[in-house]
Length: 139
Length: 403
Image (cartoon, rainbow over all chains, first blue to last red; front, side):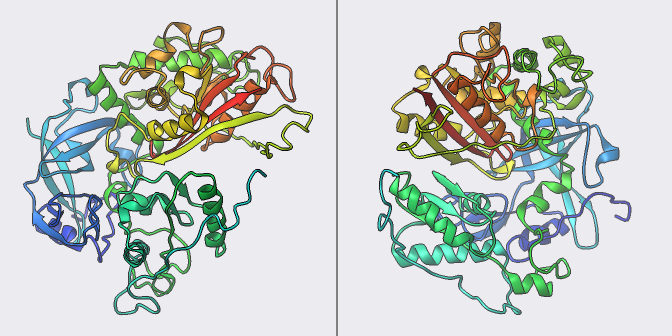
């Protein structure tokens, strides 16, 4: 972890603590509204679909699918030296979507990256407190 | 002034966050204070949060709306310090009087003490400053995004996948827009004399230009340069009393889809479909009545998608508006006659450049008018102009007409 040279997220301890607590243990925790049963991401204290405040957290599968992607030739927050790299939005199996840097793909061959490809989450220990998720194409 | 807005709107409820004061033991982020206040004020009035049609808050109205999953018709982020809320009340009064919406919220969430003491983390940044624990820095910034190209390229990849468009289709937008720039001596890309990369380009030139964020190449991306501009508005009663001709705001609309790209519902669609529908409705006109268009072109993909949203092409076929020279000089439907953000001038917020050129075209001053430019005057009497802000997040559409 000492060599993690990227920006390390600052948790919002009032809203996203369960997410980052889960991350530390290698678990993808997601918020779900118990009124309308929809999963939302990023985490909120109120459901963006039905405005219920009854939010529960559950451990998700860590499985997702590429919604869209792009190849970055420049980067910020420690990524400059990693270019080119592939960023992607991942449709979570349980619902809603998040952003990541995609692994298991060749940034020089974007034509070979398939939208809809199955991905699995993996965690980098960035510090004693924070593990950062990445997604790897697995098929 | 056509109608006095006095007493045409009222404050119907007021509330605060659950706890206010010195929240030493239980500090709240600014977003939590907003959300609590909005929950409480809607509860007090007996309405649902989803009944809110308009939102005002200094700087962050869009972020609060996204957090709540709202789809407002009117977004006011006016930030002029402590009096922002009074000013926003006047803005709402005018908008309600004009029939833009019926129910709006003015919201405030500011953990001034907790920021000063550092209770929210970050070591006490005092007043102002960013929130490192807000959603963007937590869930997007750690992955190295480098400005707007990082975001917009994802939309283009999705458009190519979903609608079968190609990089060459989008490149044609840059080619045609450059043709307009060659008629505009003040365009950065007017010629080799104005810029080493200036002058007419081909689709292959665009496709072979340096990769920025695949699938966007350098010539798919707007310029970054300097600009200053302003427009004057006057009431209909006096609009004809100046030495310059009036261009009428026949219709206007605004809308938003998200603040962060993560929350974009369809990566191939912006809220311009909503803002344009509102503008066309107010004008009593439709896309078929437009004689030209001024479309925000931060990237080729921005313009291509927006053409669809404005009803100028079927869904998925936006780049086709530029095919066969139709949108270029001498074409049947001129688009971005100044040379666009792609080749004329883009300073970061391109909306003023759009307004200035829209006025000149409809006022007939693009060719020989005040500070006009030779050779690119169209004879259009109506146009639709659309601005896009954020990461394909917010849109504002105007339908403008000449006498």
